[in-house]
Image (cartoon, rainbow, N blue to C red; front, side, top):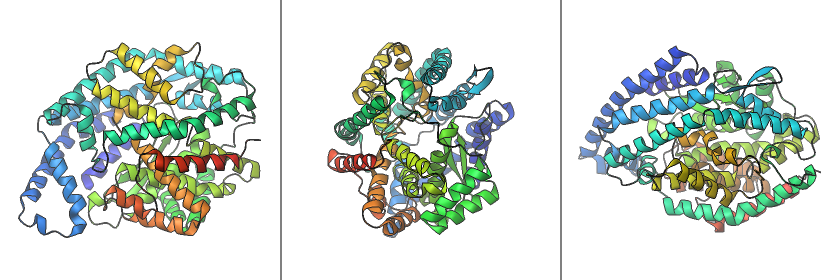
Length: 519
């Protein structure tokens, strides 16, 4: 726990200021010097455990741990340790490239995250100008990102082959401990998204186009209010925003409010936007103290949603903090995201505590539900996952083949936006998805979890919200001590990938959106 917390603290410090050489050095020292040695010692412990004659006599409670240890031991290769260090170093280069990206707009220097705020401007020409500036800034580093990905792909294939796998995809599924589903389930998920969520998305986008009064939806038309009203109010990122969110969490359940207040008192947030700060948001658990920490660097318009989301992760960490086994304090990612996405949806009925205006609260609820679809919802999740399957099942692909595969994959799931004049930007749009560079095959989890979160939401809205919250809390307290299907079941949901589960959820979402019209 102490070693893990030290690594977490160095990672937080590095992402907080990617242009600080000392922070970068400290993080990379941990990656290069401490992590490999830690893995070696961990492997020796795994070996001793697996050889113990008492292993099979352990109670049922330890079956999940046993499976994890057995899998980790089977994947371990001494020769992969320096390769995994190199992979971490390359991933850090992506963070550094993205953290350094700024543009000058209207006489001021902006990070790309800051400039994204202009995509909510009611004036279309402003949105287009801001979007084009971001696209141009990404283009300037395109070659560097292409070369970086080629190096990462080749390195990952070496790691997989060293571990006895023909493809990195198959290795990644094992390394990510996907014991309860495989590539075929992901294929079914992609097909179900096309059948269930893409048609709903197209209906929502058609209505957006009608309300905007435009001939075609363009990439810069997806974040703006369709009635061209001013963006929802922004809040000071310290006490004002935190205080409003605390009130919401207390309404969902008093214990959530207490945890959030503790985090405020302990300063367990970094929410400020600044040059050199890595993009995105995450919750990191400080394992020795068993405290959560929330990091965010997103456009101001996303502050509320991201804080709700990452707080769901934080509540998960705290719910499982009394678990004696550190391995059981962390749930599989597919369920960890149920905690975060579920919290977003459970919080939505209480948005009046964040936005005093009834109109603003309704708009925020509408935008949250629409976010299940666009711009980074179910179709995008399927796009990113399907593209990664292609990337690593065609390991010898050329950059041009990759470009064509991306376009084909994108158009399979996303058919409502007109990219005329910006086809080149679309061809490399995947460069913006940091998971592809930093955490390969980590994205389907959001889709699987979204299905779980929607099932929790459906129970809360259609039957008994108190019971839904109670089951949600009970499932969080299990941490990672149960197999994935049982964690879903504890939350009142079912782990599933096909249209039979997806269709009724898409239908319910469509009905909820119809009850929250923009006009």
